[in-house]
Length: 99
Image: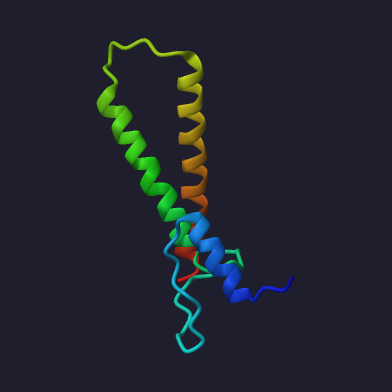
């Protein structure tokens, strides 16, 4: 079975819940190449960041300073914080040096 690339992209967008814009051959590329060749991944990353920030704010509001929470929860939060810091440092460097 053969499937068109545009159809495949549409299926992927629908499954991912992404509202990525359709390919338009007449529009000029607006994306910055930050060492990754897949277009519009910035929107995907922003979606992850939005949901991560929503979860973080919700946890911040739920927890009290006096709460005792399991160690594994603290470890997961530390890992997430470290990962975000690494990505932030890398991408902010790439954005600032590609101007």
